[in-house]
Image (cartoon, rainbow, N blue to C red; front, side, top):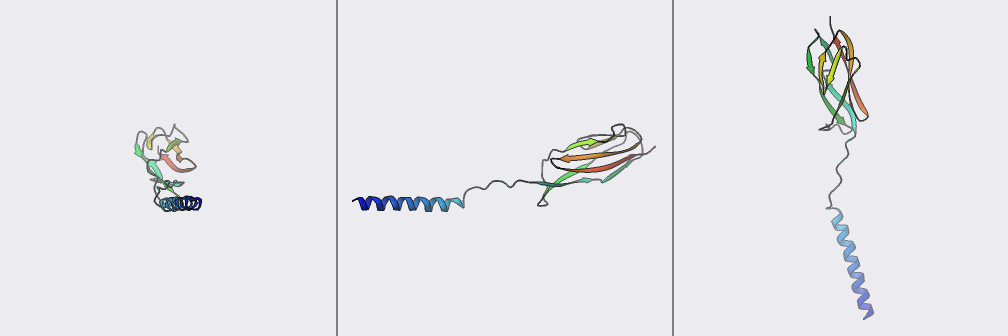
Length: 118
């Protein structure tokens, strides 16, 4: 009688292990973490002919697998707001001279040179 109980318990244990092992391959996997590798900005340099002109930059964040990270919230900055301002990629020429616009996402950034002519 005790041998039968042991056999049933052992059999039940082995079946549970087998079922759990078989189910492991069907379990959902964690989504891949996209690690940013670079930012592509278009155009790569800008020359405004006069104060007041505007242009919107287009930026894509690319991960280490060469895929675009959609929905990446970029931080935009200007080196000289007296020459050009930037708001979410929209540039406005505010004065004459040169400045750099930087798009940043986490650890990567891209700089674009801007010239506003006299």
